[in-house]
Length: 243
Image (cartoon, rainbow, N blue to C red):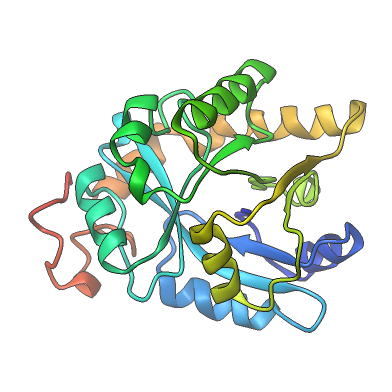
């Protein structure tokens, strides 16, 4: 909960690490394609659950929101209020990844404002430094919200470094959404040691690639599949888009 990469090597690594499921939420890919990829890589040993990590706001003021259980595609670059309203309409499970982290996160004030719509807050992320994880735990505690942890893997080697353990098996994506919405007890688990720290640093270093100016300009062009101006959305979000 969650990963950005998905292929046969990722599946093999997830199984070797003892995972039962991956939440797959790549950047800037439309929901139908994510669902197709998730189905193609799911089997009796590993469930791949489709999700979207939504970029809300402008490129310079991004607030990421992770949504599971979507019934319809939602574009990036809507206002946070517009995104949250749409997720509530779809009755999706709303999670807050890497809270209050750099310029890509929901702040404590956002979590307080939308607390009743949020299912969980991430409290361990490999891109975080120790102080970021402490702050995330404090934020979740202050809001009295359930927690989760994820590998947030943009790199295959990070798969299985962090996971969220539920007390009972979850048979499918709907069961996971229901468990999150119901606040079912869970534990955030992670590996440790020098190798874990090295993989965390590699994930943090990936931010440099992920936030290039050239990528930002391409996304604002309106040609990306998850841009709100893309014809696939039929202008449905024009009143809450920022680009």
